[in-house]
Image (cartoon, rainbow, N blue to C red; front, side, top):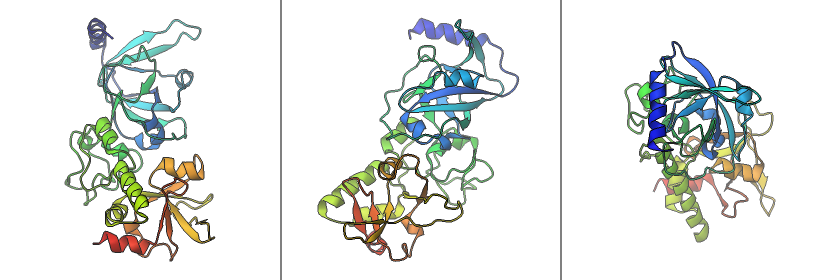
Length: 329
């Protein structure tokens, strides 16, 4: 999009009357990152780097649902949003609203409960025209709230640190919650299984030094596997990292029944995974799962050993007690 077009669109939107009240609209995403973590976006804020095209009609949005990682997002635009109407002359006489660049809508729901195979690397940010890619976000078009990528996030705009509501400055990445904030009860930002570079790109924040990044953990696992077993660095990381365990079908939300698998000798192991893609590659897409940290299981899993990332070619079997012993050194 050339500078004249951007200027003309900016001018047209600026002349529009601000909306008198908040409104819900619909938008698509073809994004591996959003596809993998769509439920976490609910209640958070997104910043579009280009002009934001939305529709009031979910059926219109669903008609454009395509790509490898489709997500249908329902967003709330706040009162005072400037929006310019766009009318598409086609069989359906569709109409959209074009919002200003860098608008910050808040997703309140998503339309499909599907997951991607992996989180792709993001391209360089640029001003993008949603007139050219109508109604569809792709990786690189957005800035995402740190809260959507934190393991402590709860329902809507709440979390373990702020059960009564996350401060707006945190939701908008105006401050990083890697540092303590008054009233957070000692709970801080701990990103989910995501590469540090991806986190920093989509949030424009620095990866928190107290947390273990997904890509760093993968490197430690590969090194330990090549050396034939756990080492101090990996043990320390595993104690702090968030891991995933498959939840048996029908398991109650307030309980956790252990799933075990047998090794070549027929011995039972508890399978743990470092990421959703690792878990789904072994257990199947959409497998229910629970997030946990080994430091929260000081007594292990009833004497049953662990196998990390089974089926990956880099699986490691070990006793939880060994992790604690090595990690404490």
